[in-house]
Image (cartoon, helix red, strand yellow):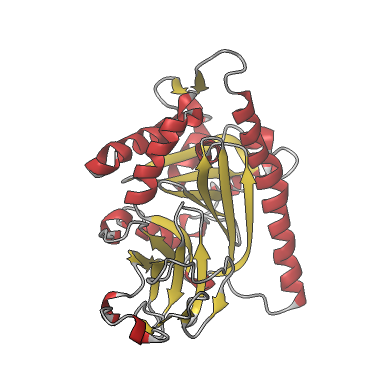
Length: 379
């Protein structure tokens, strides 16, 4: 991709699709289409829900409630990260409220104190004589398929489903490893609710047409105008956008080309996660749809190592405030809300997609294929 960018810049050409495209506005506004996405995309395919450094030690756990079901992530005494439905096997009471990571020794239901080990096994029933027919080994927490790979936490939010993570990740695993995701550590998170469809936010990261314009007062000056390569690997996608610094790379030996200084990469883990590779840190963004026009966006900032000095902490704080507040919140997410509000206002039933935005069409085509290939009962 790097060499192709250099060649395109030297020739003064952009990579373009074959023709303009049209996307029905109903993809972003129709409640029935939203419900189908929920049944298919967000129940039958692996989702990235965090980074391993958020739960590094045995006993670390946190809850996840943005997928329409209560999820509990727990690192067991054996070091294995597991996921369960966050509900007691007695009366379905919620076991824990911990949106941020916390430490526990056992999982204790607040209602009747049924107690579970960190691997989900039921350990104790107070006044067990009241449940003479209950088999302890059959009343553990309900597991959800979960695994860690290349530093990322993957979840399949359907009890009893099979998680074939090797097949799902195979096309992009090597690319993830290239950017040091496994070695990175969690620094800070933002969670924001926006009045827009989740795919509008995803769309924004699938073209560089807007970078010099929407971001002209923030990061636009660091990028060339429109020079990007976006390729599909399996169902996932990877983008390389030329930074201004790439001009110097043409005069350097190939061994000195730097994917993080001369270009900016983004990886798209379908359906709803984008990882942006900045020069010295990573942004992991998850778009969780709550309604056709409502989305909760989680941004996790990952840095190379935990800050050990006040100077380092100030540096990362400034970086977070710039990218999260100044770019994502003020520009990308706000624009997505404005687009959502503008739909149907001019009477058109579609959005126009240019040849320089062709990857957006590919993204939507892949989503449609995934929905069609979901298990029959989910479609």
